[in-house]
Length: 306
Length: 234
Ligand SMILES: Nc1ncnc2c1ncn2[C@@H]1O[C@H](COP(=O)(O)OP(=O)(O)OP(=O)(O)O)[C@@H](O)[C@H]1O
Ligand SMILES: [Mg+2]
Image (cartoon, rainbow over all chains, first blue to last red; front, side):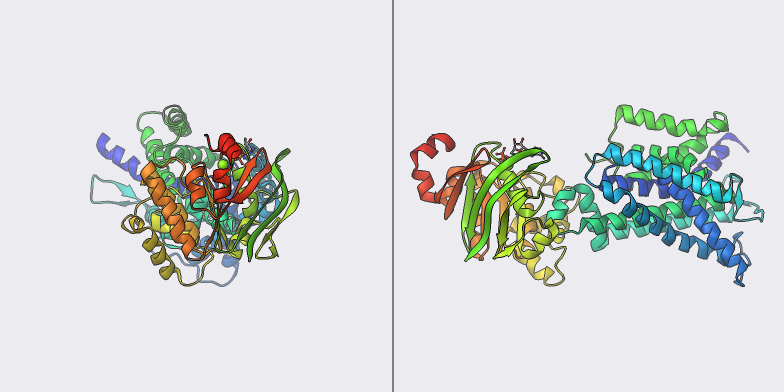
C-alpha cells in the first residue's frame, strides 16, 4: 500500500472513531451549555451505557429472539435492541444522578459541580469494575473481514459503515430536534441565557432534564458503537474516552453542539492519521496537544460564541 | 383597579441587602416610571417582582393575588412579562425563535400574536430569520419587547428600554411604549432618560439607596426642584 492510500485508509478509520467521539462530545457540550460545568463523569456515563447494553444483550440472547446476524453485519437483532434500550436506560440513569446530586447543587459555583462530577465518575467506574471486573467483555465473537473499496484499495468493515451511518443519523436527528422542536429551541435558549429563559416562562428544570437525557443517550450510543468497532468493552473505557472528548469539545467551542461535531471529527481524523508518522501509542497525546494549543490560541474554540 | 402592589419589600443578593423596604403600585392602564441614581436598586426591584430574587420580607400582589416568593415561570404565567436591562435577547436564536420563546407556555393563538408583534415592530418581520446577535441595539430592544409581549401580559416590566440607543431611536422606543400601553397593557419601567420617560408616564417613583424617596404624578416629579437637582441633572 503506497503512502497516499495509507493516509486515506487512516482517514477512513478517523471518520469511524470521529463518529464515536462526536457522539460523546455532544453530550458534554450540551450539559456545559446549560449547566456551565465540565462534566468529568461523562466518559463513565458512556461506559455505563455500554454495560447497560451488555445486560440487555445477554438478556435477549437468553430469550429465544432470532439472533442470526443481519448480513453483512456481524451482529443481529439482540444487539440492535440492546443499543436502543441502553440509550433510554442511560438517559434514565442521568436523570437519576441529576435529581440525587446535581439538582441539590443548582446555583452553586461551577467548580463545585465539577468536583461532584469527578465523584460521580469514580462511583460509576468502580460500580462497573465491581460487577464485571476489569477484563474485556465481548459484544461480538465473530470475526469480520473488511471489504475492499474500488478506490485506492481502501478497506473497511461493514460494521464500520454501520457506525458511520448510525452516528450521522443521530447527529441529523439532533439537528432537527434543536432547530425544529419547541423543547430543542428552549434548550438553545436556556444555553444562551438561563435567567432570560426563566423569565420567558420556560421551565428550565424540564430543559435540564431533557439535556441530560439527550446528552447521555447519545453518549451511550457512542459507547455501544465503540463496542461494535472494538468488539469488546471494559469498565475503564469511559475514562480513556474522556481526553479525546474534551479535546473535541474545546476544539469546537465548549457549549456548542455543532462545534462538538466538528471537533469530534477533527480529533478522530488527526489521531488516526498521526499514526502514519508517530507510534500508535502516542495517539492520545495528539488529542491532548490539539486541546492545549487550542486553549492557548483560541480558547473559545472554532465555533464558540462567548 | 390595582394591578401590581409591592409592599415594603426587603431583598438583596446573598448577605447584601439592597432594598430596605420598598413599595410601589401600578394601576390598570398606567405607565409608571421609576427613576433614581445608579446602584439605587431599581433593577433589583424588578428582579424581585419577577421572582428572580426572593424578598426576605414584604409582600407582592398581582391583581390582588399574592405572588411573593413564586418562581419566575409561575409569575410569567400569571401575566407579568419582563424585559431585563441587559442580555435581553437570546443571541444565537433567530428573531422569530426569540418571539417563540416568549410564547413558550402559550398553547394556541401563536400565529396571531406574532403577527400583532410584527405590526408593532414592522422592522422585525423582515429580520425574522436573522439571529438576534446580528441585530443593531435598537432592533434587539424591539425583539426583547416583542418577546415580552407574546404572552399578552397584563403588566410589562421594562428595565431601561432606551439605554444605549441613539437619540432618534429613544423616541421611537417611547412611542412604542405608548402604543403598547394603548392596548391595555400596564407598564412599569425604570429609566435613565428620566425626563422623557416621566413625560409619557402617569406616575413616577424616585428610588435612592434602596428606599422610596418620592412619588407623584409625572408632572409633580418633573416640576419638583429638589428632585430636579438631585436626580434629573439640572
Ligand atoms: N447579581 C448581583 N450580585 C450582587 N450584587 C449585585 C448584583 N446585582 C446588583 N448588585 C448590587 O446591587 C446594587 C443595586 O443594583 P441595581 O442593579 O439594582 O441598581 P440600579 O438602580 O438598577 O442601577 P443602574 O442604574 O446602574 O442600573 C448595586 O450596589 C449593585 O452593585
Ligand atoms: Mg439597573
